Image (cartoon, rainbow, N blue to C red; front, side, top):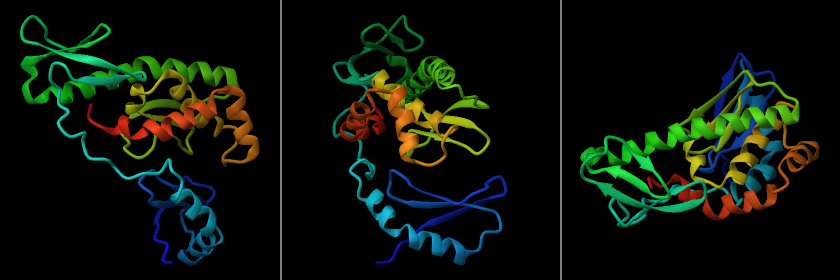
Length: 227
């Protein structure tokens, strides 16, 4: 069976790693100057592991937008693991307000979805960044920078420059799920690969790890929908 993969070379990278993204694409991250043949040999040696990752139920293709679900009064939007009712407000409101329901200015017109996305991003910065600092202190690690990013196929990432990035869509998930993803990425500053030692670090700092992984397996696709 033909195994296709994308090669990304970088002068900053010191070792070769393979990741299987949530859209099931295989990406090889290699130091600059690594030959295609060397990469092919490593991929072949990891073929069984790659197929196991590709077949994992947490990997999935994009779902289409939920049929008929729009930003209208009576619909709901996900925030911190719960669905909250949407109310369109015709007058007296210039930006989205949240008070156990979403109040969205009708005047935004067709840009209502963009406005909700910007609201999610602002809340992600407000709530996720302090949790990253908290868990970094608990783990005794230092990161260079934390960024809230728009990455459809990864919940979080840790770069070779010790930056940690988190998908803004995580703000739709419960806080115990957000904490698990944060701990997972920060643990890479201690242990690069997903070794038993790495998993023990994550489990110790995030005791609800299994519950969080189950939640993502069951609800991950909901986070990717527009609302």
